[in-house]
Image (cartoon, rainbow, N blue to C red; front, side):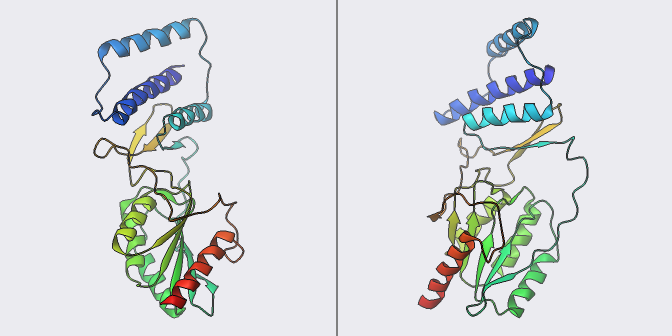
Length: 262
């Protein structure tokens, strides 16, 4: 019950801060009276047995719905389920989408831990396959390691060919800031749907229930907001073989046209 109460309090405080941000007011801590009234309300509901018992998954879903209603992007993790260490990320491989045109494809999804060899391996592979253009798949790519972001970015900065990025509503965290940096450096098209909107490493909130939240940092009294694609595509199905993926085919044909016009 206490965890549920804390979630309600956190949600109410977040709501107040967000409303102030949307009105252009610098967020401040709610006053003592507000906190006392809210606590009295929760205590009364608890005594009346009107608050349900929730497990960690139900609490996560409750909080996710609250944040969605407030238009605050967040990734919620249940630490109890994430206790087992994740296996070391494998270096992504480059595949060929159009052998005659040298259009290669890579899915970058390691933004949790840096792989110091990745940039060099991918750069060598790109040269060996005589790459002339690249499709970068960042769909469902999530992570918050700035070191991993820089490693991925160093590979992409090392090759000067036409590039196209695939992204969707699950693209979140440092993949978003990497897209922004690449687009500031060169002309790169993005295809897909708007990203989640954490906009970088964000900030972490830990709850005693075992849940952790990754949410954006307020910048200039505003949320960073999602990245909008240059070309909007309908929400894509579960990732499949790139050669059969309609989004990859769209990207390949776009790069073919770009190469023809160069």
